[in-house]
Image 1 (cartoon, helix red, strand yellow):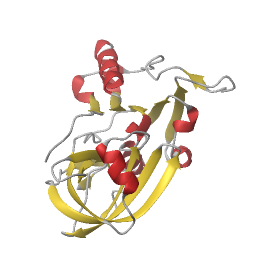
Image 2 (tube, rainbow, N blue to C red):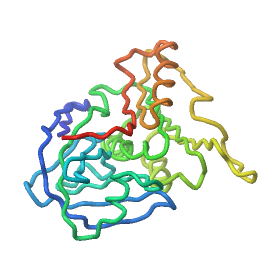
Image 3 (cartoon, helix red, strand yellow):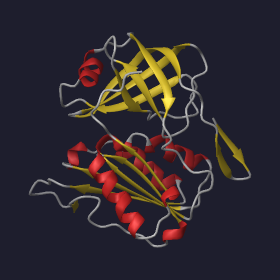
Image 4 (cartoon, rainbow, N blue to C red):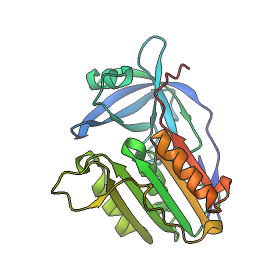
Length: 250
């Protein structure tokens, strides 16, 4: 739950519970990225703090974790985005699941969330589907009419891997001071955009008045944490979530 008190975001974390939900929509965002939407059936009353994730039961004993990408204001509705260009348990389960099927979900969990007090500068670093938890976070920043300078750096191997660019362009219209930059590490010869990794050009204007949100490849997350620590950003101002390949059993 998010409580707004005199312009300050107060986070009250909901306790994780087991839910039964129904698949209501599946949509490919590009050649390897799938969005799946669920309607929570029971118990009623699912809500999450923007940035949190859920665990989906993909076999009798295995759960996989996915960040929630949907609007935090929609009660009992959950959207996730995942990469399916591999044969992992979770990817295969969600690739093959049919609309109308029921799934077991445990959540929400995680603390990749906005701080109670926002700094003048908010830097966001994501790779691949690490953009997913930032979508409801940006929705929240729009809703509270955030006046911070927000910069999002989005890394992918190919430009075609990027998704939700329409949403990011809407954020440019609705947020006070927002820009995003897409970096491509393996560009085609005719690609004219930014090349390289998002760690190549770290911009930091005011270490003591900057908050950093990071999600994606574990090596990228560790590298950016180290860079900002060395440049004087307090550890409590660096909020992150690493993608892991290990099985989460719940």
